[in-house]
Length: 622
Ligand code: BGC
Image (cartoon, rainbow, N blue to C red; front, side):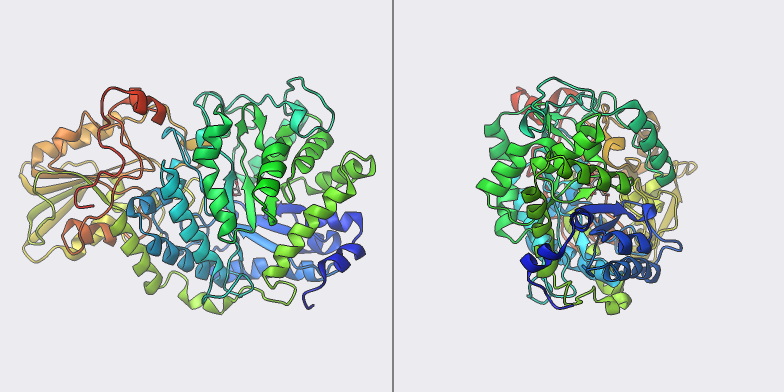
């Protein structure tokens, strides 16, 4: 099919076909025949939504089978397949795994981030995927948030600079536009102020119906019925996500941002303005609320501000299950979301119910045909811009480059540039002929822990045998003759004093709300490990693997040098490159590093009379 005239195509579509285009389903919940029969517009793999066996070939077969389903539908409208490739195409076993964005934030290097995005795009298209739910443009103001690692910085300008470099890297292949078969559609997320939610508000699901205006009901309402909750929990247990529907407790992911409109516009909106100027064609709505109104029901922010004032004419996709929480009555929930301005709904499971409910809402006049046509027009326009009607399916001939040495070299460079030297009393860089070296810490010998969450599985794959280089093996590679490297994960080495000790402490992997943590101090076992190493090593170097600053003021004096390595990904050799002086330290902190919990969130630090442990921008050598 050649690129059609969108208006003519729209005129041929039935209401059901239009709703089909507005429907996004996760791949476990439908078959290619369902796509063909219902003209489904999009399929996604949620984190961990992998084929078995999990490799580039099975991925491209899986994606291809859904695409062929779409081409068999009455009008043959092509499908968009989407995934979260937030630090490489990491759902796929064997992918090049980059540092999480917080580490790229420490590099501050736009050219590097653009190349990271290009490698990610090449690995995506090798598996048939042309839509990445990235870059996140969150500007986290509270490091207790489990998504701090996905953000480049707490600083709006740095977030904007790097996320736009990422967006351009994804969307531009060989300097061409989105129609290039190796261009990947970016998804700027999560609109808006997802980084501003307040600790303890995750359970506050009071939604006022006012802005979506479907029933004029201003009363606070419970947002999900017990019956729906049971249905969702059943889906979730099959999918393995354990979302604990509506039972998030006192945390902050998906919570409420109680900030003024001025602050929202000053701190959180600028990346979206830049995104539109940089060719963003898709934006994902945040699961959080602003001033007690869920973003998915927020007509003012979605339609008036984003599509009206800022002129966004791409399409808005909802986040996972978000529509469910807008009202206990499902049809009303759908009505609120669509009327607020959501164009495509990441259902993700119960798609028949969604399609039926939206059809009912249109037939009863609660959602207008104009709104449906506007949503479908936006989706079809982007599909046309991507060349999908002309058959520009992903160029899977690049499979050979998947996880290649060339790609891993970019990741290794990214790791080296992301390291922040927090303290150094002259011991770094280490000499390669270093005598007796003790290495300790489980994460020193575990590529899964090095990668963190969003790697193969939603919460990561610690203890797995992920392809890559652990820090331990990298140290062994670099160490010269005359250096003896011994490893014990718990730091038990007998009585000899080592010349050098390297101890890695690491946050256990997490994703989203599972990473919301009130206490950011090191667990007692890690404190004991550091003390044990201190007693056995002349010189002690600490390496911190974490998705955010951790509270380590009580341990700092135990180290001769301390390095923030974030969640570096598959290429641990990048750390050894810098530790042993082949590459200089250049990274700087993208977040201020608090002394103690009284300096969290950022507003408390700003108000504090004491300085932080290290300010944003700190980094010896950087
Ligand atoms: C996350 C999104 C992600 C989506 C699809 C949601 O839970 O909030 O960031 O893109 O899942 O996996």
